[in-house]
Amino acid sequence: MRRSEVLFLYDVKWGNPNGDPLDENKPRMDEATSTLIVTDVRLKRTIRDYLQNACNETLWVTGEAVSPKNRLKELELKVPDKGEGKLEQLMRELYEKCIDVRLFGAVVPAVERGAMETSLTGPVQFRYGRSLHRVKWEFIQGTAAFLSKEGAEQRSFREEYVVPYVLIAFYGVVNDLAAKDTGLRDEDIGKMYKAMWFGTKNLITRSKMEQTPRLLLIVEYKDGVKFHHGELDYLVRVESEKDDFELRDVTDFKLQVGDLIDSLSTIKEKIEKIRFAVDKRLKTVCGQEEGSMETFLGKVVNNVEELKLE
Image 1 (cartoon, helix red, strand yellow):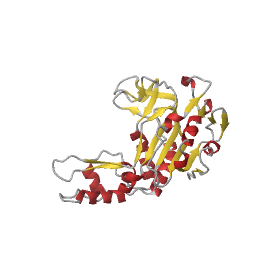
Image 2: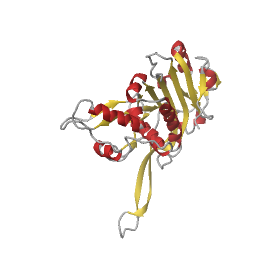
Image 3: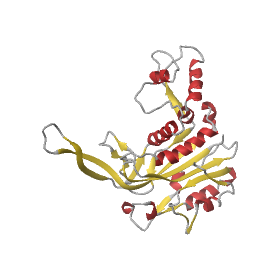
Image 4: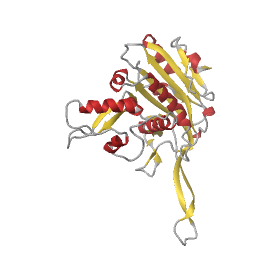
């Protein structure tokens, strides 16, 4: 397995990408820049749900409220007794059984009484996602389906916060060194990319309706290269004649990738290949030139491969 970097873009229409339960479930915002924030936990939940429901994979973190010890029982594993090598044995069993442990690591119960739980870092890490433009949320009130109480004449009101449109970028790294520790396989990574793309599209809930993947880019480095570029999400930007707050669809702007292409070109000798998937409605420009992502990526390296996400 080679070290890789991941850039993932998706958009949301009239929804709440990641509400904050401690703040009336409002969309998470960076107030200083008026940009929207999505936690890495939200993206990992999307990935996990798809792996479980579409790929029939076993998960360590299912989304259910359960203690680590009880989850071990559900997996027919047990907290090891005190002893040298017991925790390592448990982790090997978890790595083998649970794809999300191989991907993201895990929190495992303490072996000794009174000891704290052990947190193990996984090879796949994502930074918080952020919008590539300024965003305003809208406060919407509506009438609920039922009366507020028995005998009342009026139904209660519901309140919600939504954003009319937002394009979100996530950046991540696949660490080949940590992958050796968890036994991460190439096929696991392939399933994760499918889960990012189709899992996002399949979030068909009231607050997550109309989430559409627009671009998935994987920069894969050569064998033995212990390097990553970093900040790929800061090398793309939205260009539009409309104000940020007026954006309502992917056709309202073009994605400027000139800085990304120029920057990756400076490290092209380290890159083995670049893989990508792109939505046909996303328009891309490199400097003043409008064209396809495949054409632009071909300026960096010859080995460019379109992902077959089927």
